[in-house]
Image (cartoon, rainbow, N blue to C red; front, side, top):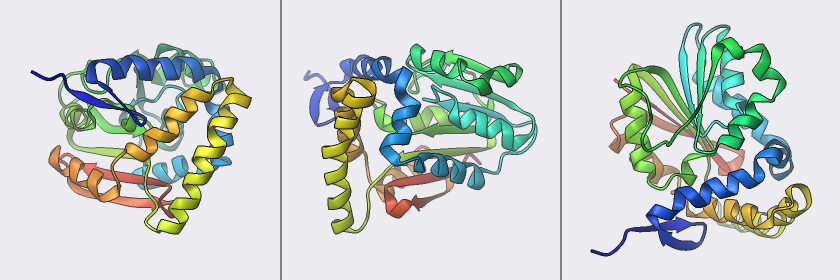
Amino acid sequence: MDEKTTHFGFTEIPEAEKAGRVQGVFNSVASKYDVMNDAMSLGIHRLWKDAMMDWLAPRPGQTLLDVAGGTGDISFRFLKRAGHGHATVLDLTEPMLVAGRQRADAASMADSLDWVVGDAMALPFKDNTFDVYTISFGIRNVTRPQDALAEAYRVLKPGGRLMVLEFSQIPTPALQWAYDRYSFNCIPVMGQMIAGDRDSYQYLVESIRKFPDQETFLSMIRTAGFENAKYRNLTLGIAALHSGWKI
């Protein structure tokens, strides 16, 4: 039987190798990850994450599972908006979790936070555990995103909410062309200058181009069983928010 393959950026590799390669990328960039996010997006990623919270509208006492949540951005926002609740940050890469724990917000929210090393495709939690599942700029790095969506559905309680924030595709070809020129010519150079790592940021740019467009990903969410699935474009479609409910 032929070995299953997947993409690592623009490179085709055996499926079994992807998780290790992704870990290598984020091990390399963990200490500079937040700085690079600001540089690459000119700080706009903060507005996107705030928009995610606006649509999510966290409520007091809710439990969140934030997958690929390494440095805790989404969990910190969730807990502040909810007033009180609990967030579990899960990430495949331990150095990302370490970087998250070292942030100032982590100390003030320590009683409301758990940090767990784990795989989005095989979550170490029981069925019907969480009120909310989020994944922010992480699902494109998962070897089989459809499996991750199935796991999200499994661990959410009935009535639970899925929300995915991910880079996407600009529907206007001319604007997509201009964005591509910026991404491929500038972001790897920033990676070299700020994080001393051009190759990891070259992969991150390529991974965005390999991720399904908004409508295709919406159909994947529905296939996983989620109802009332919708999406909203952010900044012309550079990023998109997808939402669904477990009924």
